Each structure stands twice: as structure tokens, then as C-alpha cells.
Length: 212
Image (tube, rainbow, N blue to C red):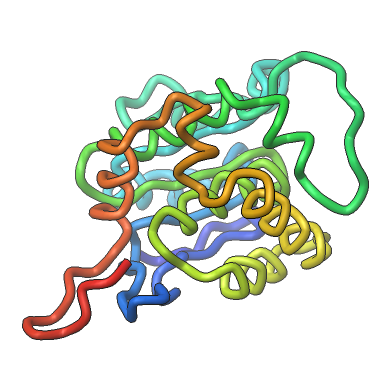
């Protein structure tokens, strides 16, 4: 898939990241970007003709009204706002508040990826930074990608501080022990976890490591 998406930023394929067990995230399995509302007509047509099978839009409804997705109404489009409308104190230097106050929304977005038809998934919010970064981090944790690689990838995003992701991952491990325990509180079950692993990871070579 060619990621030549004019007027989109923070566009990248998560393929190539490796797990602690030696497996790799498949190319074109999981992509991230900012809002695609500025995409050109040729780019939109190329995406529709490519391998994407689900686009998960994490924006608030009001953001979608102001900047409509060109894919709204397509079978591949899934609107799953990652943030609720409740006011809460945003803690400095991390996404802890996002994790703790938006479990239903995070669970719905995670399940939208897990339940997608076979093929690539694009996750995006408005700028492709915070909401996208948190959901992508949870997906990669489930796949078995180590924290340092997740933080390094997050740091490739324009306008972010790597420490935010490091602090968030540290909190998640300290508070819940592992990502599956946290996601269970978001109504994500074992079948969803396995579906994400199967979607994201290359099959191990015959006789090779099978770890996650």
C-alpha cells in the first residue's frame, strides 16, 4: 500500500515492529494518521481500491461534523469516539486520565479493530497524536511489542513528547500488571485479544519462535 496521502500528516505503517518473542508486526496490517478530511480525490480512490478493510475514526461527533470523513457511509468506516463528554482533570505528562475515564470508548474502539474483516486497519483522530497514540499503544502491547518500541514509534509523531507515552505505559503496568487486565475492564475479552494478535503479527516461520 502506498502511503502517499497528500495533506495528511503523521501517516505511517506500524509494520516491522518486533515482539519480545521475535515475531514482527505485519506490513499494512495497522496504519495510523491524522484526519483524512483533506485527502485528494485520487488518494481517496487509491485507499478504497487498496487493502484497507476498516477505518476507525476516534474523533468526537462534533469534529466529524466540522470536518467530515470522505469515507463516512462506506462499509469500511467505523466511528468510535475515544473520548467521552465528561470533564475530568487531565494529569500532566501522561495519558493516564484518558485511560481511566474512557474505558467504554476505548473498549469499543479496540473491538472495532479486533472485529474488522481481514485486511488493513487505519486508526486516526484529528491530529493523529493523542487518541490515536493511546489506542495504537494498546494494540501493540497486546501484540507483544515492548514498551520502548511503542514509545519510539509514538515519538515519530509531530508535536509529541516521548515521555508522555513512557509515563502512560509505566502507569498501566504498575496499576494493572498487564494490558489484558486493563482491557478486561473495557469489556475486551480473550477472543478480541487473540483476534488482534492474529491480525497484527506475521506467522512464525516453521521451526521458528512462536512467542508473542
